[in-house]
Length: 388
Image 1: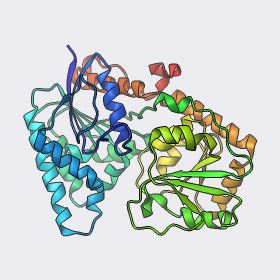
Image 2: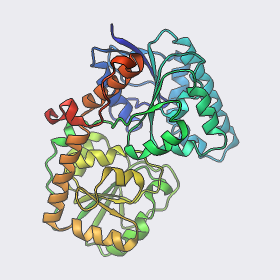
Image 3: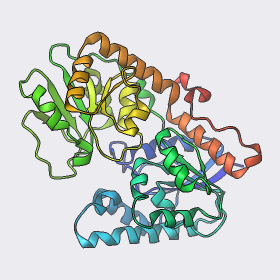
């Protein structure tokens, strides 16, 4: 009999062109293709496989759609208007009702720690996908205590998508849950990209939501090297905060995965992120690496977990180190060497979304039948990722 799994997420793309929560769409489609899983999904309305049961009521679906249209729960909480403070209360009530309404499942899968907060007081096993924002959530007053209460009395696996999150999670919840890193997968389209960067004018690419934390010191550090027109910075992503863009920055708004893969990644010299945001394991960096596109990144734990400096990417922590790394990546031989190494790394260690689904299924089995559980694996080679 397939395992009956109820997954809940506060984010889900409305269609194949929507960038918000796109990793959830890939994961849901991959799990739906596994014979061992019978999946139900509580999430904002979007395209799902025919085999996936919808767990949202029409009223919940309409409310979640409005939440997504306003930028999602995290975005609303950053707004100064007092009325926004009611959104998390309403969300937790609706989640609690959904968890209780679907009590006849074998296992629950919460996407983000916040989604597990209103968990019913029963013994149904729980898997939680943990992202970087969740660690910021735990710094709020009393949040750790509230989260510990939600996890007690059941078998729990907390599954960060990057190894660097294991330590803080183990310190907070190691006595209540197993901590098992489950890297997300990568769509095979990224591995198939052939790059032809412009050798005459280096074209740097930044793909990010436009917030102050996500941009970090990007404009300040790059300005001395871009205002003369010898290089070009193309900035892709939605404007989520009121930010004045320098006139030397070429902002193109949102782009679909098809546009990134077909237009932007093949012609770019490298991808740059100087984010100071609480990153988990940024999916766009994985996709760039899979495409053989070198990365220059700020020395955040999330970036250092993904990149070995000087081998499959470059890290920087100052304007001077950023400039030095930029000049290195504009050398054709260095660019090709680092891009090839990046592609090899993610192919071997991350694989595809089908590999990710199989990693989660191993975690599911371990919770449902601990005696017969296989040793967990986070290496895609164990899932035959080489066929990607």
